[in-house]
Picture 1 (tube, rainbow, N blue to C red):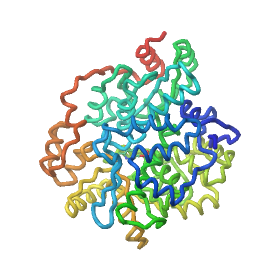
Picture 2: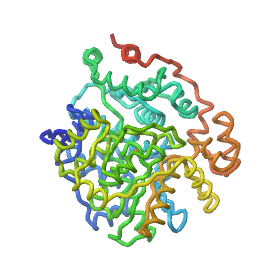
Picture 3: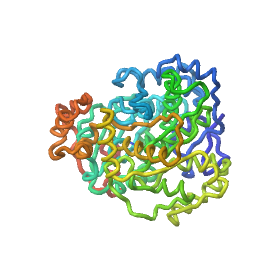
Picture 4: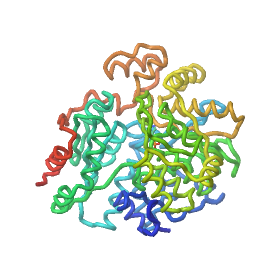
Length: 498
Ligand SMILES: *Cc1c(COP(=O)(O)O)cnc(C)c1O
């Protein structure tokens, strides 16, 4: 097995190269040339393992140029005491129908921790194999959750620095507090005057900026990405779908080989793509159900076969899914199109030039067989949070509520009673104001009074990393303009270059 690019399948690189480099030179994404297969015997063995052991077993098959000891060191360092659940990704059967896969027990209370706690370790081993001695500089543009999870993952990681840019007026107060109080000797955070697209464009430009590149080289440094286009961020996510199937077996929800459905609240298509990979490896998954918010570009795509970003962008109560270009869809299309990279390059060029592309009929047929899709408005999200809480006492965050709504609608319309796992992507305390409003409570106040109000209303424990924020020292107050020159100067200043 090797890794190739979705836009040029003559490229062959190792797993370590794919992770260290992040994205292929011509702009394609790295994908495995074949998928390892799991047998019933593997599922029996996996059931008896802890989460880090399951992760070692699965990741070893993809990272074939890592030794088992190297993989083991990564998984034990990543999935330890920084998670507040012993199972790391527990499967919580809240009622007969909804099996909730809780992916938010990590240090930043969102599912990004599942990948970003391990990525720095995978990156260190990968760089050691491909560019020993070089320092890796992780540059991130964030609209909230990714920035904090990346900072927390990479803080004080040997041989790395991490710099995060966020839009000054584009993140929640809680998200801002999480970032400006970040600890660690190798971290930098800067707000930019502008929106998320400005931050993203600036970061993308710096990645390929010749002046920046040569200054980095002189300093013995190299950029890499912690975005979900990096294979090292995607592959750890496959583990929890396999782990969830083991837990469904253990809880007697399915017999060996009996299929489940999986529902995923989707933005950049990374999380649901990981479920697709788990399925292709042999995890008995029937339908992958793709749940979107009001930005329903994926719902329309699965209905019509046309991906069209020429539409308004809406801000919603599930901000981590407010996205129009779902980068990881490119990997799915590559596999469904028979690994025809020329066809993918054409579709992506069409997206860039015409804001849309249409998949060929054979691809659409496979999409219909594998996927269902649906979307939820903010009102439907609020109603779902209230109904589920009143009925079961279980408190959903806004993103997970999108998935619940879409699943219930799918089940009602299709009559499909296959046992189902719903991916839950954030702790409700990350989105207190929308949740208080959904419960019919007063939602005015600073982040800490809202925390207290939600606690009073529900008795749910406030997760320690969010409760403690008020006591942390503010370290990063810089704000810069969002143009490339200013951002280059800021990066050089943070890295003591030039
Ligand atoms: C990032 C994120 C998502 C979307 O995941 P993708 O892999 O981008 O599809 C959903 N919910 C939350 C809370 C997130 O942080």
